[in-house]
Image 1 (cartoon, rainbow, N blue to C red):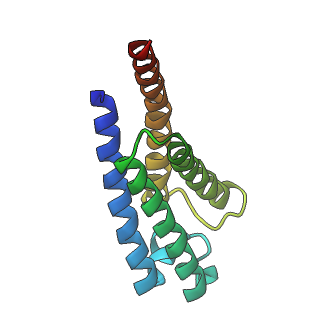
Image 2: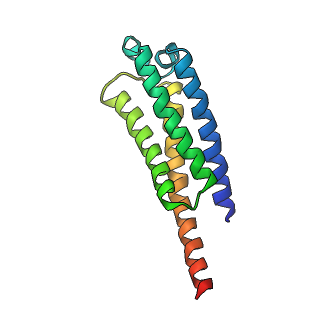
Image 3: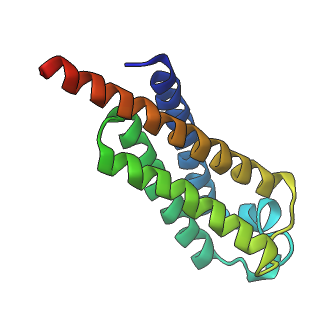
Length: 140
């Protein structure tokens, strides 16, 4: 396995662990979301919304961790990549369409993580393609 894919796997585990922590925070105290993320409309954040956000974050965390474990699983890899596109779209829409979030560090951090992860996973796809091609050449 290439060094880049090993770094990507480590990145996915780290992002997964952070997301699991955010999940616990969302279940424990919904004020976390109104203070860190949805600062433009904190009154819209309630316990139900925080728990829903927590479940969504937990699902993303599990998917990303599973991808780190089995990075060559193409279906899982694409689903994981989609989770980052979904997170990017969510936070951008909250800032620029719904105006419930402002561009604070609490929003910029997930935007940067999603963007870097998308770039890394798109580069990782190239490494997986090269590995698959070289594996097929060895068989023939």
